[in-house]
Length: 197
Image (cartoon, rainbow, N blue to C red; front, top):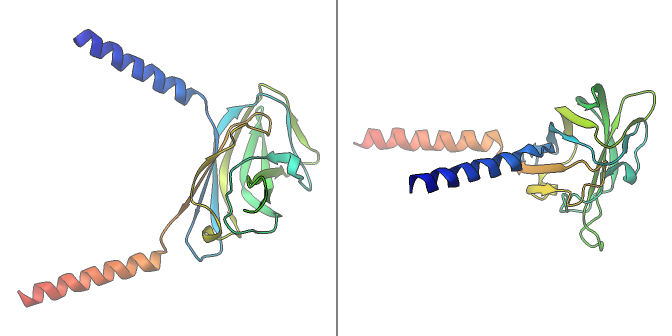
C-alpha cells in the first residue's frame, strides 16, 4: 500500500512538472471599475515555434496574437497607443516595448476573438525565427476601463504570433475608497456596540 501511494505521488509530481515546463508569455490586466484605466503587467517567457516580427512603427493586425477571446465586452474602436515601462527580450537582446495594438472584433462579428500586438522602439523591425527564446517584463497603464473588459483568464488556442503561447488574465480590484468606507463603518459599529455594553 505504501509503495502504491509513493508511485501515485511520484506520478502526480511528474505530471505537474511536465505541465509547468511549458511556459507562457503572460499579461495580467488589473483595474478599478470606473477609473478609466488599467495596468497591464507582462511576465514570462516562451520559445517560438515559427518566425515572427515585433514591428518598429505602425502595427497591423497580422503583427498580433489573433484569437485572444472576447476581451472587450463593449465595442471599442480598434486602436494603437504609445506605452512605456515594458521590455521584450528576443534571443538575448532587450528592446523597449513602445506601443500596443488592440483590435476589438466586437460581439456581433462572426469571429469575436480580439487581437493584441506589441511594437518595439528600434530603428528597424525585430524578427525572430523558430526556436528563439522570447521573454518580457514590466508594466504600463492603458486608457481602457476594466468595466469595458470581460473579467477572466484567456489563452490564444492556436498561438498565431510566432507560435508563442500567450495567456491574458483580466481582473477588477475594488476601489480603495469603497474599502475604506466599509472599514470605517465596521469600526464605527464596533465602537457603538462596545459603548452599549
